[in-house]
Length: 564
Image (cartoon, rainbow, N blue to C red; front, side, top):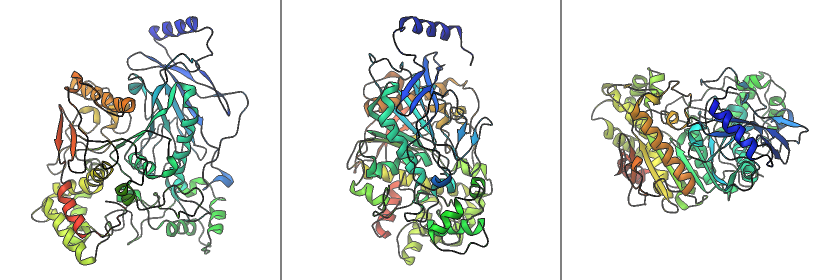
C-alpha cells in the first residue's frame, strides 16, 4: 500500500500522541484478534479498514444449505487487510480478478474514521450496506464498493457478503433445507454488527441498514421480519422493495428437486433428506452452474418463461428460525413490521439499463404484451381471469393508444413502472401510516452514472444502478474518474442527504446551501411528496404513473396482496 506524505505525517503524529492507546489497526473480537490497516479517503482523511472479517462459520460440508452459525475462535492475529473471498456468482457481473468465488464467503468489512480502542471518542452512526445483484451475484468487497466517500461524512461503514443463487436461496420449504438462507446470512451479519461495532467506534444504537436493487429488496424484507427487532433504527432502500413481485418465489420446492434431478439423472426421490444428501455431496460449482430454467406457469416475473428462480420465500411460521412468514405487502399495509424511518426511492427510468444490455428486449416484450392484454397482469395480482384482461387493457392505455410494437418507448416506461417505481411508491405510501418516509426520484443524468446520452426508442432517463457510482465510487457500470463539475456537485448532494439520514434519521435536518436550502418533506398516506434529485433539488408530488396504477389495481385485485 502506498501512502502519501500527508498520510505518513498523520500516522506518525497519531503514533506519538496516542502512544498509550492500543494499536488502532488491532481489534480484539470475542472470537480472536484481527489486524486491519490505515487507508486514506478521497479528502485525505485517515480511516481504518478491516476486511474479510468472518461473521459466521464457513457454510460448507454439513453446513451447506443450513442457516449460519457462529464462527469458531482462532488463535493469533487474523489478517484482515484485504478482500479475497466472495460468494459464488451465478449471473453476469463485474468480478475483480483478485476476488475468489468460494463457499467460504461469509465475511464482512468494517471501515471507521475513528481510532479503534480509544474510549474518549464519541461513537459514530453506522451504515450497513447490503449489495444488489438479483440475489445471484455481487459482493461487499472494497474492489466493488469503496467506502471513502461516506467516510468523509464521518460515519462508520459496514459491507457484507451473503450466499446467493441456489446456494443461498434453494429450499425444500421445510426443516431440511430452510428458506431464505441468504437473507438469514444478512440477519446474522446484522446481529454481529450490533454486538461488535462499538469496538470500531460505531454506535450500536444508531445503525441504518441500506441496499440497492436486490439489496434494497433485502432491506425491505429485513424491515418486515420481526426477528430483526432492535437491530437497526433506520433503513435506506434504493431501487428495491420487499413487495416487488421479483423478490418472491412461489415454487421453491419444485425447483429444488428439479436441480437435484439435473445434477443426477438417477435421482427420483421426493424426500427432502435425500435431496439434501445429494446436494451436500456434489461440488459447489455443479450447484452454482446448474441448468434449471423457469417453467411456464412457474415464473417469478411478468414475462412467460423468464425470470429468476432462486429468490426469497414465505416460510411456515412453525419452522424454527423462520424469518419471513406472511404476505409481504400485507405486512407493510398493516404495520406488522419493524417500524423505523426509511429513505426510499428509484431512478427515473430504471428499465433502460436492462434493455440496453439486451437490445432484443423492447421488440420481444412488445410482441408479448400486444398478443394479450392479460399478459400485463398474468399472476402478479390476485384477480379473476376476466378482471386481469380488463386491468391489463387499462394499464396498456396508460402507456400507448395503439400497439407496443409501434411504440417501443412505451415498453421501457411500462417495465420501469411495473418492476420498480410502482411497488416502491406503494411501499412508501403504506409505511407512511406508521413511520417517517422520505421518497425520492433520482433524475440527474451524468457521466458518472455510466450511461450518459443513452436512450432507447426516444426514452431517456437514469437507468438502474446509475446512482451507485455517485455514492460508492462503485465499479458497477462506470469505471471512470469524475470530471464534470455538475456530477461532483450531485455526488456531494447525495452523500450529504444519505449521511444526514444515517446521523439524524432526516436527510435535511437544517438548511444547507449545497442542497439549495430545500426541506425534504415526508410522505403521508394522502400526499405523495418526493424529492426530485436533478440539477436542482425540488419537492414534487405524485411521481410517475403511480396513482393511475393504484386506481386500477385497487379496484380489481383481491386482498390480501403479497406484492404490488
